[in-house]
Image (tube, rainbow over the protein chains, first blue to last red):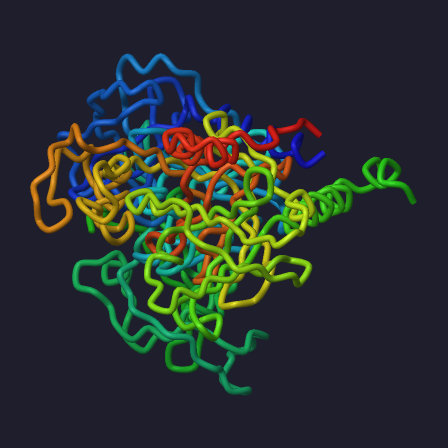
Length: 297
Length: 274
């Protein structure tokens, strides 16, 4: 029984092994990546300290040059293109990740063999605000040990199917994984566009309580007080003023920063969007053409 | 409810029962090695009953320093025997102790079953049994995480005490040439600062696992899912990576000793498929 379980775990590591590569993109120790589509390797963004002179090492020890395709700092993912890879992409877990599910974190920081550690899914949470203010809808937290160089490698289930992409760079001190469905979608966009579009207004804001009688007929108890408007930003061009309280964005009620962040999807870039603000105690609607958030760190 | 009925109904429950059963068998062969007058003056470690039951395998660093020449081995069932060092391999950090049984039948000490460490695969379940912080018979579970290549000096030649490498493998063992510290070692300073060429070195493929090890686990066995010993736990690297000496090196070493009784210890009960 135990032996059978043990063998199946080793089988799972072996199965994912052919799609598991070592990624050399930083001065310190190498990191890991996974072949997610033909000729394309998905890895973590923070392990690529350079965009040229990248190489990968495959399971059979070949060292191949990799071409940088795109990166997304917010979700800590990056895509590389590798010619002559000749490996089938990793299989993907179809079921939703569940708390308590047995998982293995795998990586290839060493040239000798794949490495693995075991654990369970501790949290399936989200949305998560990450660096640069962007949000990913869902994340997985695991208690599997993240050995140095595991970032960018897959988190797999008992059958060797990929549940997520492991990273320790998203939140300091936590081993998180970007769920496969999100990671694969972002990777596809990166492969096509080289970056992920995210909406940008150019304001600094903080949530404020709206006292009764100062809500101009609205039911919401709070709004977003604009405390800074950047020069030449979409907000400036749309006529937003410091002191405005944002209560609605694109027909959606806004009561705190996360809600606005969630609304600022990349699909809105370039579109004119109605923004309702409380100004001097009365409601005004202004039109703002959403800009695109800069990609570089 | 029988075990079979359980396994049909609930897999985690069945696994849990299988693990408990396997672990109980292993614990019977794990001993505590006490070094010093009061039992702990110069360290306490774990060990595993080896061969026909007269021997105990442990880490050399547990018994290396014995100013009082007081070495005792405590069994899982509470029995205690005086012991003496029969052989040492400081570079591999291994020591073989011979027990003074005084009429007790050796087989009653439950010698451990040996596994084949050369067949271990990454991802396989492994369990460590030892006495972390002196707590007896603690079991921790994990999987084989990978391998670390290290170079240690081969079996010391010449008379005992000359040319020996004092200290354990941390003097040039897996810390050098590990998975993320560059390639193999081409040579280095050996005992008393002498330069040693690589030819004098033995390549060792250590087992890395994610089982939790703490002081007191040293010398205890790392067993596979069948309860067969595949390695001797010896240290922790990087805070959470456990390093074990594969049992194949133990057997090679014991065979090289060319003492019939000890060599027999190397060919103990073989692995059984359960």
